[in-house]
Length: 186
Image 1 (cartoon, one colour):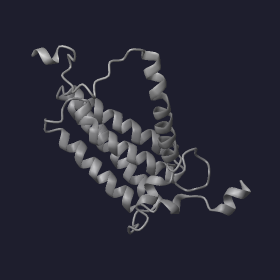
Image 2 (cartoon, helix red, strand yellow):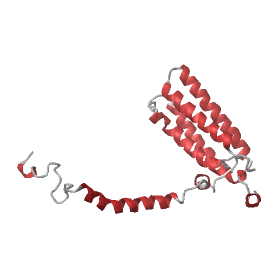
Image 3 (cartoon, helix red, strand yellow):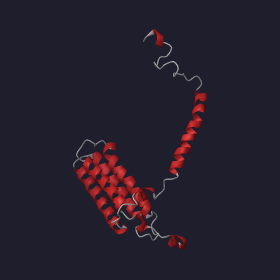
């Protein structure tokens, strides 16, 4: 280390280096910034609700009805269950775990979804669309999280995540929602 940098061991220019002399004072200076940033994030999150994801694709053609979507959910559950069992038999723990988690997510959400819009189940159809986006994200990052992104099994997850996005974009989310008159009467 050169003699001119003995005072500043991190080698920052002297005008930008400020050692923390009083940690509580430093926290007090940062607190207003943190509060402002938190409020900004919260204000953006208030714009996000159960309809945000399905309504993003509102201008796309909508050939998939709620009934067809229910069958597609069954097919996706079966797909991931099959991959999970196949990977388990091949002793591929990461892909098996990721596949069974995805199968459980799709099956659980499907069992609780009100596809008909009659209010008998707790998850309305648009919320189901948002949860489909969460599941697609889990399928896409599953290979990375479970350590098999460089293995051949990863393509099954990434392909299904892309397929899920196409299904989200092509589903008529409004068809499975209760109309306002039904909501007022209920």
